[in-house]
Length: 394
Image (tube, rainbow, N blue to C red):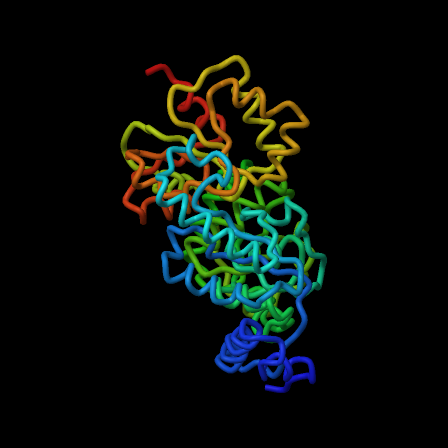
């Protein structure tokens, strides 16, 4: 690999231990993938924030870097394992909370923004077309590459943090034009008309294309919330980091000749939707994976107006969207019903499996995938049906 004078200085240890270690991580990654050089990035989004995933070894690693490391570019954080303010109300164990706050303290010392959201593009970190970034959250990576047209690989926690502390990332993968072309054309004939429908389609197609780049045809329009759920589902069932959608995404141009074609019809939609649900009566309802947009919070407020919840009900979202919800009056309506905002976290990275719940109802295909892996049963429902479950008489 070739390095600039500035990069050679960082690699030599001129700027301290954390920067040197970060450069070593990036150089090793670049050599594995055949990168010829490093490139500057304009923003970073770091995954690996929940103590549930990091453990004590992760805290030690962060504390070591925090001795002399500082973020060089705008850097936001993925969700933590709890609401950083109202963790007691969530029922989080005090020992877990203490460890989680150590993680957050280390990131704060490193100069990262304590945003704790999987939708940084809804909380002030929105890159533009062609911008090189280094993001770690899988659903945000897909959304950034596809909907925004920014350029990022699926970074791991250490490599994203290394990019933050150096302002660099290796030039390979989705930073290069040749790797952003479609590899599979998906002819959609199903009536995909809701965020949950887009999620189900993404979950099915992610399994088919694996690490490829699907090109969706047959969808006339898609809202932000639908593209958000599609991004998350593609990334959870497969290794997808980017998709194209004819007439919707900015790089959806010509498809290479000979590209494989698959179809997604009404029967496929029904089958995958049914397959995402288990048997059982939900005792916990949680929406917002990825984090709810302001529009979704407003919809929930409308559905809850004048009603009371009878089961634990979390609305997961970012602090920024919660602030906007406060201004709109949505928060007061939701909290009056007995439902709880779960800012900074979600049902996937919080220790839900230790909190006595057995069946989780959610409108997220991604959450269904990971909650099952954590030993919980799931019900995949539309947003309005989630609210209906949460307010159903005991």
